[in-house]
Amino acid sequence: MPYRATLGSETFHFDSLATLLAKATPARSGDELAGVAADSAAQRVAARLALADLPLATFLQEALVPYEADEVTRLIIDSHSAAAFAPVAHLTVGGLRDWLLGDAATTPGLAALAPGLTPEMVAAVSKLMRNQDLIAVARKVNVVTRFRNTIGLPGHLAVRLQPNHPADSPAGIVASMLDGLMYGAGDAVIGINPAADSVPALVDLLHLLDGLIHTHQVPTQSCVLTHVTNTLQAIDQGAPVDLVFQSIAGTQGTNTSFGVSLALLDEAHAAALSLRRGPLGDNCMYFETGQGSALSANAHHGVDQQTLEARAYAVARRYRPLLVNTVVGFIGPEYLYDGKQIIRAGLEDHFCGKLLGLPMGCDICYTNHAEADSDDMDNLLVLLATAGLNFMMGVPGADDVMLNYQSTSFHDALFVRQLLGLQRAPEFEAWLQRQGLTDGQGRLQPVAARPALTQGFSPWLDGPAP
Image (tube, rainbow, N blue to C red; front, side, top):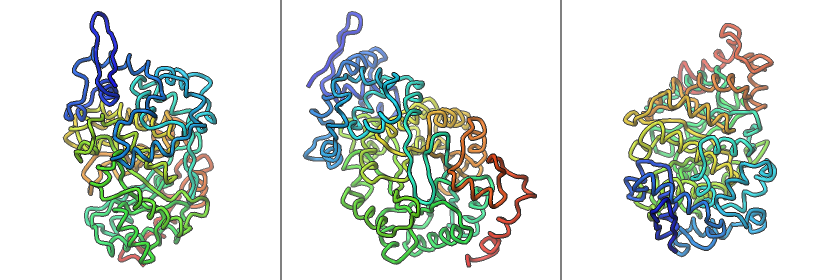
């Protein structure tokens, strides 16, 4: 149905809900590339005026991507909880914004509301919010998950230790792991993006990670970030799989381009649960997302990239994952042109994921041909950590030598934890203290005072893994 708003003497018309949402979105290069962005600042403001007056219930009546043609849409509609939605069912999008920013939106209340919100609702309200609004609301939401440790507690920030190597060298991977552990990183997951894609090579990496974790009794989980079908084969071969990873998106067509479906993810989730490897909990999935993936797959249906990103979170929450992170600047400047757009997108994604009940992290990153630099990443890191980010990336030197992009480092994690008084996962912090790596207040001990772990890793550094 058409929508309209009057701004001064001019009336703006929007021929569909998808058009209205796209025109209301803050400027970004991906929407311009798709031809759905606002033509002017005035049109953008008019779209936001019309969107603010839109009843939330509209999103349950008008699908952006056809129900009959898209399994993600069917998942969103069929899993919607009318009972959870009831407290805000009478509100408009603008009314929801006001409610979220008010005292009535408490941490328990937001947790109860999550099953009643659709991705399109949270994407819509995010378009009416300033950055400070996104931070203030997301900070109210706590999503706690468990496998071998506890992630997402208030006042905590975990780190994915990312020891990638361009040739999957065991010694190179172990050196990066040791580097990260000595910095107190790795409580979210020790996760490798493999250079090779053969199942035997992936199984070798899984055994390497598992051997190190169990030899040193590290209370964390491992993951090799390969395609879900490879992980299923590895499970069939008896490999020690902790977390099942997959990149996901917000339309069926995009997920098909990734080689996945809900049925395949259902199978993978069941396989991971059957292993029962998490002593503290059964959150055993790890998902990554990113604005622009649907457009790059030519499966965006004329919907703006931020709304489609939020739809990916509906897929994620079906599986109660341990970790979800938006890889916010990885696809490139064709989708998020510069630091300003990357920062805004990171805050939007974190806000939307948290409102939908997800344990959101962020790979705060950029590609070398984007109009962004490490100062932009410093800014986004502080903003997201203030907003209650569950976890961040820890890459040696912040420069991933295998994926060839810029992320955040172990030192960055130390900085933001110290700045904001954030703690590691409690089980991981206790292990660091037992190893003599940190003192009773979570501060790193001098290098000379912590030689034991280095000696324990030397068999892997000096030759093939034992």
